[in-house]
Image 1: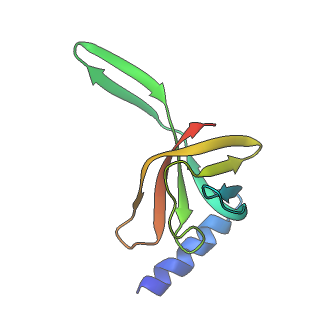
Image 2: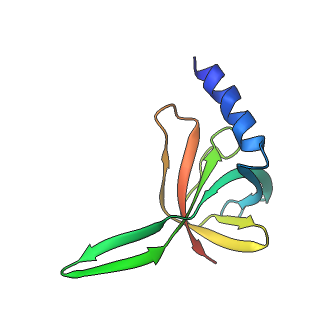
Length: 104
């Protein structure tokens, strides 16, 4: 069953309406062209009585293309550079990484 999901993900990431080209560079590594799904949700965080609004950038990467992303690794998307912050999280099927990015 995992092969069916993996094939479906390959199609979704390749779709130009969903996936984008990105350059992934591990800390001290060689740049690699990968596909990513970009999400930029707004987040509201409660801090005491205050509510703080912030923009975020998250992307999904296929484990098949990026087997072990780490905090500090670099991602370039459309000329914008980002650094992975925090620990990447894999999905239940272990096929997709979700990583939080901060501007480089």
